[in-house]
Image 1 (cartoon, rainbow, N blue to C red):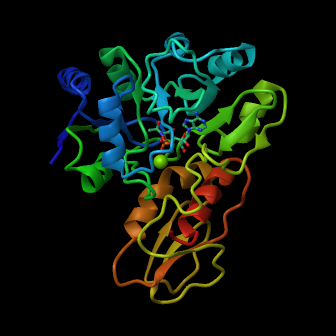
Image 2: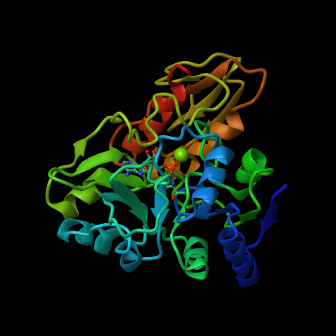
Length: 315
Ligand code: TXA
Ligand code: MG
């Protein structure tokens, strides 16, 4: 099993060393836990895809310490620079034209002529990137298609035998993956996430088009994704005694077990609790998970997106 390590400077050095030798290291970010690998090593990237059980066509996000480091890998135009200045380090991933000179594994970019880059804000992620002194690919640290990990324990439960180390940074503050924006002729929102659409639009000075999962890019956008083992039923106005209830606001009564995303109806609190609550309600012997209605505004856009995928017909 992977060692669960408190993120001391020794542990971070050891993690950077493990990464340099092609091993996988899970680490906390402000959004969700990432499963890190050396972005420039095909071998490490293959190991990562194997550990995730991820379809090979799904490209990975290249994590960097800051915008200057991103400039080694992608073309940064004025708009991209403006977004980086406003939101980095933080939960915004930008899809930008790949520089031919970038040493990032072509496999990591799934052969596309763009790369997704992000500078995470979590101090442990930053310390690890600094110690490693290079780009890391880091998909969410969960088996492909399943609920993302927001605590170190989740990673050990799901991937414990497949990673060398898990750096424990407590629960992730935001709890939802980064927002993914592709810049180009018209900026597109590829994945709603922890940074709400309006904040990005304010800085861009223009609206974001929504791209509902293109053919290859499909960001976390396989119809069924983020799924617990139990079936998920959305917009529940009632609940059965053999169902688990994921409540929002004042909870319906009569469920076998209830967890509330936010009693006071706060979307930020709900986002932070979403994945850990889905995991906690995913218990054998129940018929399914009923989810109360959640408004699709602000962070609600990303929360409802994840819940729709969790409730979609399974492949
Ligand atoms: O918050 C996050 O972004 C987390 C933490 C660990 O940083 N990472 C994460 O990675 O969610 P992952 O691999 O689970 O999701 C990456 C998404 C994928 O759905 C992929 O399709 C999209 O990013 N993506 C990566 N490169 C892309 C590209 N060149 N064009 C379009 N989409 C891309
Ligand atoms: Mg994921």
